[in-house]
Image 1 (cartoon, one colour):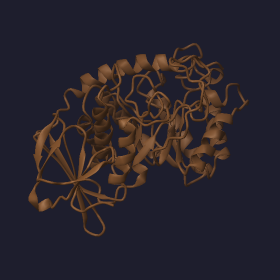
Image 2 (spheres, one colour; image 1 turned 180 degrees about the vertical axis):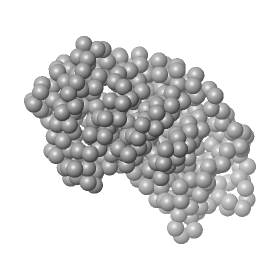
Image 3 (cartoon, one colour; image 1 turned 90 degrees about the horizontal axis):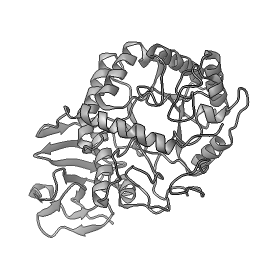
Amino acid sequence: MKQPKPHLLIFVVLLILSLTTAVSLSSLKMDVQVHLQAPTQPIPASLFGNHIHHVATTPTYVTDPPISTLTPWPIVPFYSWRLMAAYVEWFELEPKKGEWNFKILDKSVALAEENGVEVLLNLSLTPRWASARPQEPSIYATGTAAEPKNIEDWRNYVRTVATRYKGRIHYYELWNEPNLEGFYTGSLETMLTLCEEAYRILKEVDSSITVVSPPPTDGEHGVEWLNQYLAGGGGAYADVIGFHFYVPFLPPETMVPLIQQVQTTMAKYGVGDKPLWNTETGWLGIAPFSDEWGAAGFVARSYILNWAAGVARLYWYVWDHQGIYLRLTQADRTTPTQAGIAYGELQNWLVGAQMNDCEAKQMIWTCELTRDRDYKAWIVWNTDGPSRFQIPEEWGVKQVRNLAGEQELLRRNRVEIGPAPLLLEHQLSP
């Protein structure tokens, strides 16, 4: 089946999403003072997930600019790769009933294994032959947002994929942004049935598989969908609760009250003890960031605040897209931008460290990190712009590091801070 030009369709849908989400999030005001008690365990490498679109195949449609070569494997580390919009959805895998095409998914899984990366595979998007409404428009191919008209086709799809990749794919996500009509047009009741069947089959094939619930988005509208889904019993069909914490046109700090709303909803329906994953977040706007350090700061603050607020994983969207998103790579899809460099450098700051607390006072945020051997550091930034920060003498800071990995000795007890966080260390790093 020939795929249409989803980059253009996605642009329209995400633009609408960004406008509606910005309105819904406008009521989520950050207090002047905020205190977050981060999880007590050390920050794992699994916090860092990513999306890559063209590492296993090039588009079959015309792109602007043209994409005629594969994306090289990213030179910055990440733990998990979410396969969404990577040409491995159901309608791509089974374009005709019983005729399977696993070439791209096989290559993707092999690349992940070769590079020591876990895979999170999204199960969604019905082939036209199986669709309950085969003439219905959608983000991808016609009919893909509808549920399958025969539940047995869905069961066969889930079982076939899970069996083929048993022991190789350990994480599955059920559908994508089901509260947006571009991705799903069926009823909530039908989604619950699809997820119940998928969960049962995945666990039958391999009981060690981790299943992520359908991740809604769109701010408070997404929270309301999740509320209805969990009220219908959907929490029983997931080991992890998924959500997409996009905050269009707004700073990443706006994610915090939204995350707290989701956590409140989870607790309400008895799934508050399950992990919460942000399986897709990036910048949604009418144009990419023009300020490279601002972009780097947006990425870094997103990860810092998601962890501090209790989100166990964040999958950045996206590594190799040159359209409207915040760009992690240059036009060659290889060379990291300042934001891409920050994505890698931040892992040096966080992975293996324990975040003791994270607080904001008058738009200045400080997050304390500790490690073994008496290591202490503080991440500091100002969401409001440049300012002078007086470092408390009791911190004993000796070194300052930025998101480019550059470090310098502290010469006085104050530093210039802004939207791009700095790391203030009380020990000298090698």
